[in-house]
Each structure stands twice: as C-alpha cells, then as structure tokens.
Amino acid sequence: MNHLSLKSLTCRTLCAAGIVSLTLATAAWSAEWEPTKPVRMIVGFPPGGATDLVARILQPKLSATLGKQIVVDNRPGANGVISVDIISRSEPDGHTVGFGHIGTLVISPAIQKVPYDPHKSFAPVGMMVSLQNIIIVHPSVAAQNLKEFIALAKSKPGQLNYASSGIGSPGHLAAVLLESMAGIQMSHVPYKGGGPAITDLIAGHVPSFFAVISTAVPHVQSGKARGIAVTGVKRAEALPQVPTVAESGVPGYAATNWYGLLAPARTPAAIINRLNKELVAALKSPDVIRQLKDRGIDAAPGSPAEFAKFIREEEKKWVPIIKRSNIKE
Image (tube, rainbow, N blue to C red; front, top):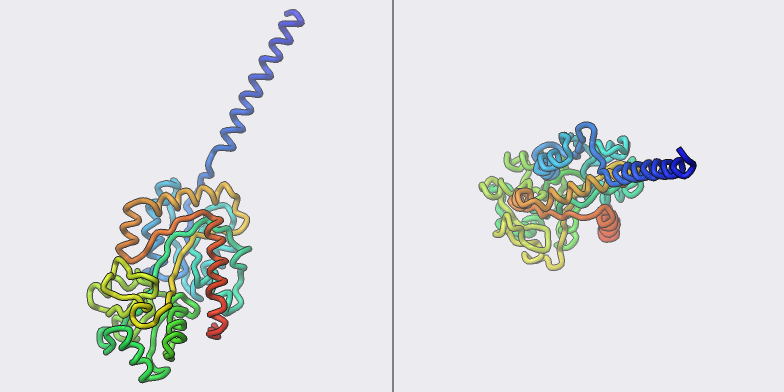
C-alpha cells in the first residue's frame, strides 16, 4: 500500500470513528431520563382527602407514560409537613416525588419551625391544580346561607366550632380570613386531613367544616352536608348553586388552594424536565380534566420555573395575613 493510500484509509477510518462518536453523543444527549423502578408519589394526607384524590386521578396516566408504576404513599401528619420532609430527604434520582401546597410551602414555614427550606430543599416539577375551599355545615345547623352562618357565629362568640384539615391548612387560613373580614370569632377543631374531618361532620360531631371543595362535593350533592359558600373568586362548576363568600356579603374575600409536584433538591434537570413533560400531558388530557372538574378542581399545569415563581408570590400575599392573625402551631 503506498503512502497516499495509507493516508486516505487513515482519514476515512478517523472520519468514520468521528461520525460514530458524534452519533452516540447526540443520542445520549437527546435521550430522555427513564425511571428504573416504581416512582413513589408521597401524599401528606389520609385517603379520602383532596390531595389523595388528585394523586389517584393522575396515577394511571403517569404510570403509563413513564413506563413504571406510580405508587401513592400516604404519609399524613402536621398538615403535610411530615410528607414534604420525606421528599426533601430522599435521593434526588427521580424515584421519589410528592405534593407541595400552600400549607407546606407557605403557611407552615410562617407559623412554626419546619425541617426543610421551602425554596432550597426542593426542585419544583410543576403546578398541578388549583381549587377552592367551601364552607359546609351539618344539615342540623340552622344557617342556610353565609349571612345566617355569620349571624350564628356572632350570637355565640367563640362557641361555633369549625373543622379544618389541620392547623395552618388552607381551610384554617380561609376561616381566619373570614373571621377577620366578617368580625366574628369561632373555635377551630383541627383534624389530620379532610377525610377524617368530613366523616365527623357527616356524623354530626362537628357542625361546620372549611373543606377543600373536592372533599365536599359528593356530600353536598347527596344532601349529607349543606354548602354555605365557596371561598374563591367565582362559583365552582361542580356546585354552581353555592355562591362565593364575596357575593354573599363579604366583598373582597378570596382564598384559594393549590397543589404542585416536588422532587428533592439537586434532582438533575433531565429528570425534572421528563417529569414535568409527563405531568403537563396528563393534566391536559380530556379525561383527567373531566375527572377534576367533576370534583370542583381546575387543572393548572406549568413549568418548573413558573411554579417556583408562584410559590414566592403566594408568600408575599399570605405571610403578612398569617402574621397579623397570630396563627400558632
């Protein structure tokens, strides 16, 4: 083989090797992260509550698109603080995610010492849903509407009991805001979640409940509980007959709830991007939207950056109210 042929062969060999290397590098760069085992989705409340409901609705969709089973892991206690602490301490490998909400990321850090930093301990994956609270009462309670409910509270200062899913929960905050704006004083009965609270209300053990709307919808529709008012800025499609607090005589009142998906801090961007992609797709699917709407919940998909920004905006809105109301754990 002459010198020129050897040089040509060497060039072709090196070029071919370069093309193979480039192809492999491009494939590695473009390949999406894939889970290698079941993904644990941690929910901070018992079965029967709104967070568990949303998790169960999303579970089959995410299991299918991720190619591994999503395992819903209920870890109730401390208004969800226990559950998000578990998330913050988990391996950042994409196999443990969970729910963050206004209670765990805004309210609890403002009223007590929590074992995590709401911004530094997590990697936001994306917003999931927004939903209202609703004031419901046992059918034996005389109040038929919010005006009568407020009058009942004023007639018995500090004696009208109301349930919530925990100290510092969205329902608790919604009640505190109503007390402040309507000039009433009630007695708070915190539970470890919406499921136990709605069970006690239906049984008549507690007269009223500031509930996440999805927990209350079937019971209001069946007549086991009476809807007094919803706490958002508009009526809920699932219960259009129930007016808002604002239109019932407390103008300017609004208190909404939301859930987002969290991963542990230091989770690689490729994992976060894949999880967000599948989460957004699930929340935009017609059957998921319908299931959520039937329980008064609105899908609210977004990017990780949008979720992080939203959390800080909620802090600016609610922390001053929490401080003024002197809510304590």
